[in-house]
Each structure stands twice: as structure tokens, then as C-alpha cells.
Amino acid sequence: MVAVILMISGLTKTQTVSPSLFYPFGSGAGDTVNPRNDDGSSSAINLQSRFSFFGHLYSQLFVNNNGHLTFDQSSNSYTPVQFSTYRRDIIAPFWTDIDNRATGNISYNQYTSGSVLLQATRDVNQYFPGVNFGASWVFVATWDKVAYYSYSGTQTSVQVVLISDGSSSFVLMNYGPIAPTNGTVEAGYGTSSSDGFQILWSSSTVQANVPNLINISNVDVPGRWAFTVSQGAPASTAEAISKTVPISFTGTTETTSKTGISTTTSLSTTTAASSTTGVSTTTSTSSSATPTSTAVRLKVTSLNLKDTFLQQLQVELWKRGMPTTVRVKLILIKKTS
Image (cartoon, rainbow, N blue to C red; front, side, top):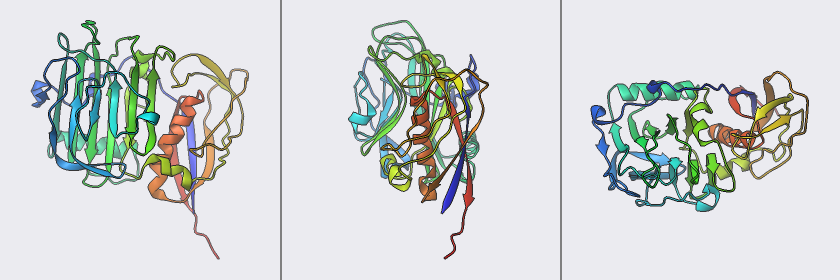
């Protein structure tokens, strides 16, 4: 039996992101640059190390101009589809209608040695303590100062980093300055067998503060998101968790929406109910208070599912209006007969 204590605390927010957040990119890093065209893509990129993505091993991928990576074929899709209905393996740091014919570059590179591997190793071990990870391969794709369709003249910078040691895989999404847009935007990843993970969804009916991507994070580094993606499909996580998980919140006012980015609500002490992911909460009005940490105790039957579960818990808390950082402390309990 594994008892997991989760410490949930308010997310740190700042107004700027250091340029050092991005991994090396551009001509100075030896990147290959995609052709400047609307709805374009790279040709098939043969990976120097196979990349494990929720049960699938990939030896190639495509960098698509509209802000996403695909594995089976290139994609010119400029209108995002909710990951929960898309059901395709896709890594989409910023899926929207990008047009870099006049402004911006889209480039990529992969590494099997050097300082980039050291940087990736350091980042993974920082964000996922206890994995004892050593990167052997890194893939970096960058959308640098790109514009929206059509010839918007604005500048948006986004980067995605794929990291592997040959068996375990991780993804970083880095956000620089993001221009406002009225177009549909989706950020996160989707899989062929689950709802995936949605950082942000913004459309004509659900407006989110897209430029605020530079300020939010799930690893206490504003503008950066980190995920482990080599375990089994996220949808299987619920099967390893009790259907009802007790969660309590200390009342405070936080910024929230469907994606945890806009509007305001008040949180108060409450108890979770069951859901398809094994985590669900209800909130009610409470007087404002100083944000505090909350301890959540639950049981997970497999250590291999821990990181995937935490990602899903993060999503559930965001949807319910609590921008959070989730930290985990494992207590191994030996069951006696």
C-alpha cells in the first residue's frame, strides 16, 4: 500500500519570463527551419532515439506550423479540436491558426550529447524528484515570434521540449510573450486512448486569457509546464484510485475559469465526490482569506501511476478554480497479515 500526501499551494505568478527559460534555438543552435508558409509542416523527422508516448513508441514526428507535433503524419489543422474528442496522439503547446509567412520562424533540433542534455537532466530531476533521471536524447521545437493568420503582425513565442533516457519520457512546454487573439487556442497534449491534458482552451464561446500563459505553471516556474508521458494511458489512472477521494480547501479567492485563467470565485472547505478521474470537488462561497496549503491523503496502488495521477489531479483543481502546485510525499506502508 502506498499512502500519498499531496501538498497543494497557490501558484506563483509573475509578469515576465526570463529568456533563459527557453532551451537553445534558432540558427545559432543549428536548428532546421520550417518553410515559411501558412498551415505548413516539416517533412518526417527521423528521431535519433525512439520516444515513448503513453504506450506508443515513435521513431518519427512532424513539427506543424500551427503549434503542434504529430507522430503518424503531418497536420495542417489550424482549428483546434478538444483533446477529449480528438483522440489522436498530439503534443500541442499552442494549437491555433499561425501564419509566419511574414513574421516569425519555426525551427527544431535534436540532441544526443552536450549541454542541452545536462540542462534536460537537471530540469527533469528538479520537477520529478526521485526519478534519478539522465537524459540521453532531447528534441526541441520552437515557434519564435510567429504571427496569427492572416498577417496579424503580432509576435508569439512558444517552445516544446521532448526528453528521454531511452525508456522514460518527459515533455516541457515553455511560453514566452503571447499575443492576444480572438481565434481558438488549445494548449496541452492529447492521446489516442484518453482525454489528454488541457492547459488552456479558448474559443468564441469560452474566452480565456491567452497571454497569461507566460505567468502560469504546474512546476512553480512561470511560463513552464512539465509532464511525464511514458506511463500507460492517463485514462487508466482512475482504476488505481479510490472512487471517492477526500479533499479539503481553506477558503480563499482565486482567479479561475474552465481553464483556471479568468473570472473570480471563492473557495471554502469542502469534500470531494467521485468522478471519472477519481477526483472531483465542489466549491461554495466563503470570505476571503490568506491562501494556505492543504494536505490530501489518498491511496495509490501503483507507484508507476503516481505522476500521471498528479497531472490529472492538477487539471481537476484548475477546472474548479484553484491554481495550484501539487507536491507529493510518498509513505510506504508495509501491510501485515
